[in-house]
Amino acid sequence: MNYEHAFVCGNPALDFAATLRARRTVRFEMFATPDRLEAWFIESGLVDTIAPAAEADVEQAKEVREAIYALVRARHAGQEYDEEALSRLNEAARRPSATPQLSQAGRRTEATAEQALATVARQAVELLSGPDVPLMKECGNPECTRIYIDRSRGMRRQWCGMESCGNKFKAAAYRARKKSAPQASDG
Image (cartoon, rainbow, N blue to C red; front, side, top):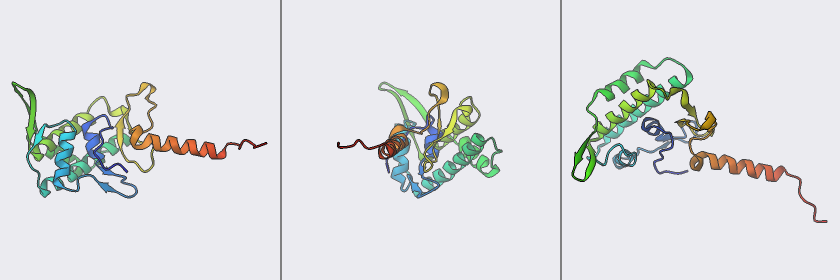
C-alpha cells in the first residue's frame, strides 16, 4: 500500500476525504500526526507554508474529513445529507480561510491548519453544489473508497488512479487470463 498522500480524485475536497484509506477493510489513517496533516495541506497546493499544527488540529481535520466523506457519499447516492455532517462542514467553511498574497516573488499562501481546513471545507461546498456532481464516481477497486471526478471521454474511467488501483486489477486480470489460457504443447 502506498502511504504517501495521493491527489488523484480531481478535487481537493475529494482527495482530503480519501485520507482515510481502505475504509471497508484495513483502514489506514493518513493524518496520524500533525506533521502529516501539514504535509497534506502543502502537497495539495492549497498553501505554500503552514504554521505548526497541534493534535487538536488533527482531530478537527478528521472530523471535517468524515463530514465531507458522508456528504459526498450521500450526494453521489442521491440521498439526503446527514444534518450533523452538514453542520460540521458549514461550521468549518465559515471560518477564515487561507488567503493568497502577492509579493515581488509571486503568489504565496501562508496559513494555519484551521485556515487551510476552512479552504478545504469551502472546496467541498463548491463541489457538492456545483456542476461536477454528475461526474463523481467511486473507484472500481472494492477495497478502495475514493470518490473521484471522471472527466474522461465517455466517462469510462473505472479507477481513482492507475498507479493506486488500476494497475493492480489489470495485472491480476492478465495473470488470470494467462493461467486459464491453453498451454502450448512441447511437441
